[in-house]
Length: 141
Image (cartoon, rainbow, N blue to C red; front, side, top):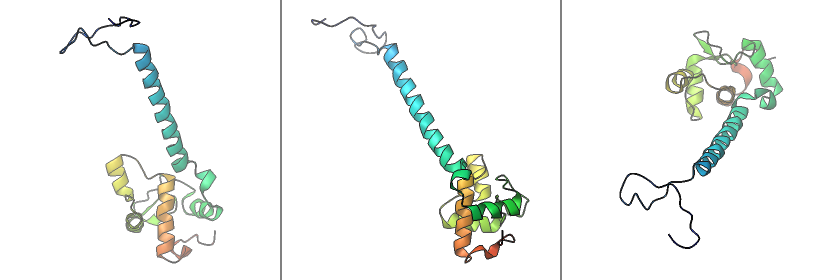
């Protein structure tokens, strides 16, 4: 051992096992804890972006969702899906137009329904493709 070096726990397997000290368990615990905190913060940012719709959904769109489905983000009547009550095939076209998965693809591939943000983005795509609110029965809401 060199001058000033402290003996540490030694590895018990592999080549040169007697010379290779193991990492300190406290150091590893600290690293894992830091990574867990970072992952939690990243998830909270993602969840707020996608699910805190009261913070970012414009009032007009809220009124349309309230009129169409009662703001039910899990709305699936068979023919119409999303809180904005878009025809299922139209929702798929709108979602694909902006690079998202359709309602059914999201359920099948990701095992969840589209988030409120994803539904809003698909509704915006529908709005832009069809020249406004003409596609909604509650357009006057």
